[in-house]
Length: 321
Ligand SMILES: [Zn+2]
Image (cartoon, rainbow, N blue to C red; front, side, top):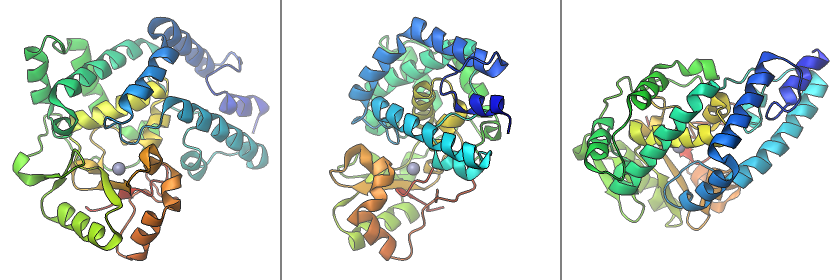
């Protein structure tokens, strides 16, 4: 591999100035973000205010940043040795930035953020539990009826549609599209609320499986994320895109883009009671809860260490469908 290519692969935010289009674009975007949205301050605050309010899978910003630096160094070492960043390297060092990562064009960052913030306000109004099930038509209705939210702009609607229709393989995400309509609704009579969690599971297969697992593992196993509507998944994904500074590839290495999440059709996440955000880190695999889960012998993890979805290892995500 050329030294120039290698350096490019290692530049976290385009600060290695090589004059290439990619680097120039990243620099431009970072300047825009910092000037236009006071990114650092806002993200810091966001990390504090949202973490315990249902921002599943989203690590605190400072932790994510620290992990990104560590991952970048590991990739640097690996590239120096082998000269290639294969799919296994990408999912292992998912917080790293790779040479061919796909970035949202800089001019789309403002509309991405305004959509994210509007969905945030919808969530504040409807509550975190209901937000898990909310369809886009319902979100539009709330937005029109509540001045605190404000109607979605045409630009936001266009962006939402474009995001939904984009083939996620261009980001390097290879999971199946499980929802094919932006207007998809989750029938309320097909889900049940799981007491004390603020989350829902599909009646039957998912809820029975969860009950069985919890009965055998114990009460220190908890549901950390269940059914997610397209609205919910879009909100989570945009939070990740924001945190990744527009790097769609990096975002989709740890969160399925809207339409591609198995949470819409039956999968769910579990954690250990009292383990907090570490339930969404590799640390969960070190817990006694995870060990007991594995000992059962019938629990399948969707995103294994060697998965072909292009997604990080998620020991907490239980495959149901
Ligand atoms: Zn999950």
